[in-house]
Amino acid sequence: DIRVGESGGGSVQAGGSLKLSCEASDKDTGRMYDWYCLAWFRQAPGKDREAVAAVYFGGGVPYYTDSVKGRFAVSRNNAKNTLYLQMDNLKPEDTGKYFCAAVSWSADCPIREYDYKYWGQGTQVTVSS
Image (cartoon, rainbow, N blue to C red; front, side):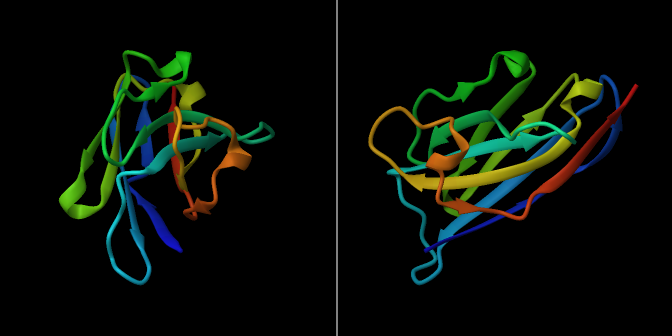
């Protein structure tokens, strides 16, 4: 089993920045594996959970949903088993609870919620206008 945990949420004004962290590791070994996809999802009140970004822990070209391209960027610190989501030029519509998720995969990282097996508890991001 993979343990997943997020941190770094908060409240900012429009145009501001936040950096979220997702630490993921095997509960038994403390390691994370290159063949796992890690994804950031967000869920706004009354809306479905949507994939914001996804990438293999081992690297590769990340996926970004269109609404965040050019504003959000993922990066990894494999030594710390951590995936980051740098969010710049935040907009009120970015408000929501952000979740990190992980799944063992072998093709392009999935962007559907039900493809992911392991989930964190989420961290709230609130952007005011």
